[in-house]
Amino acid sequence: MCLLLMGITSYVDPGVVTKDSENFHCSLYAYDDVTNTQKDCETCHISRPARSKHCRICNRCIARFDHHCGWVNNCIGLYNIRYFLAFLVANLVLCLYAVLLLCIVLKGLLDKHHMWHERRPWQTGGLAPMRRPAARLLQWLLVYYSVPVMLLIFLSIGTLLIACFLGYHCSLIVKGMTSYETFKWQDYKDHCKAVAQDSRPAVSLNTWQLWARWVESQSVKKQAKQHMVLNIYNQGAWQNLSDVLFPKHAVVSKQD
Image (cartoon, rainbow, N blue to C red; front, side, top):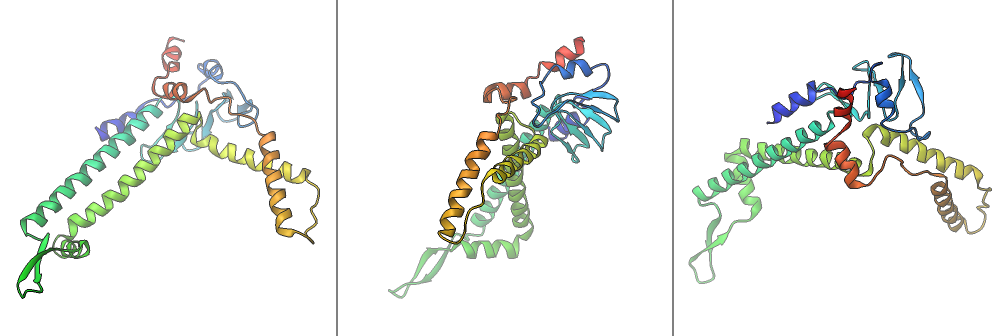
């Protein structure tokens, strides 16, 4: 399943903007004149739609460009981002299954060699069974079964990374943003802060220096928020999610 979804993500059209589909893609999203301004692509010789970008690696303009993925050797855009998310989910499920399977195997090895308990001298002079510390169990597994343990550690780290990456993309989708737009929004926020900072008069640092700096920073943050505009592409969590998972644009573009 992972290989199938990888192939689909790699070969499905990510949303290439051509001269024939230029008008259609331009009608999908409006220009907010903040992160997306109307401009022409000098390479493709077309009017670049809002939320699109010319990929230097693929040498083509991609509608609702998210990023260029080296793992699938294709851009992630309007039409294949849902397959990319499915690819991440499939990899996450596979890694979780492998981690669970290795845990069961290692537990079976500990049961087979009766490593959970050990007999230690008791006050009465006899031997009493006591549970081994977790550090001793891990040490025993590393000595005699180092390959499964190292594989378990590697898969656990991979599972965590994939889960974080998937969660990051899901959070962007809910907010109505793409990975590429996050950089633009960060530049815009920095610009607003700089404008607010320049509009503030100089503060004397001779008296109440720390207090003055704190008050000024809070005032700058408030002014920066006042200068910022809202993301017009955020239509609500459910609408943003359905726009990614069930894009009606692909059906309409084929009819055109």
